[in-house]
Image 1 (cartoon, rainbow, N blue to C red):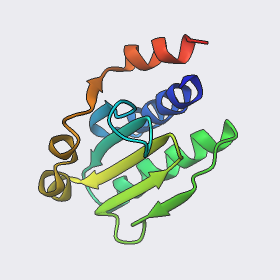
Image 2 (cartoon, rainbow, N blue to C red; image 1 turned 45 degrees about the vertical axis):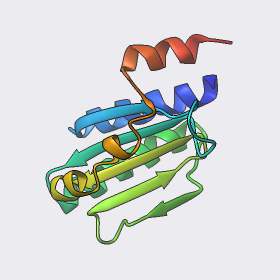
Image 3 (cartoon, helix red, strand yellow; image 1 turned 120 degrees about the vertical axis):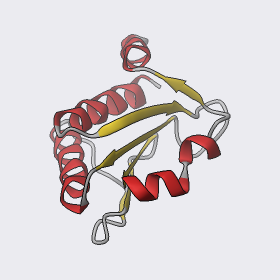
Length: 123
């Protein structure tokens, strides 16, 4: 969990650096085997959505992490990056409202950056 929290924290920092909007961190470790964390954010337009994803990939890549897969980059209305224990979702505003992942994953626990930092320090 420590490594996952560190990856999630780096991804959140990367999203914030490129002005990602309404960043939501959901700890799904207790309700799913898919991952430990879902990160959800949105951008204002296709270019910003792609820039957010590019920056997350660059930031995590420098730390030695590479995504297992990236889906939706060309259309950029919903891009999903799978890092195994961390899954990053970046939407345009309209599609974020439509898909409403926060509602679908409401059994997970919404946490803040300070919770990620505390989890990253464990071990």
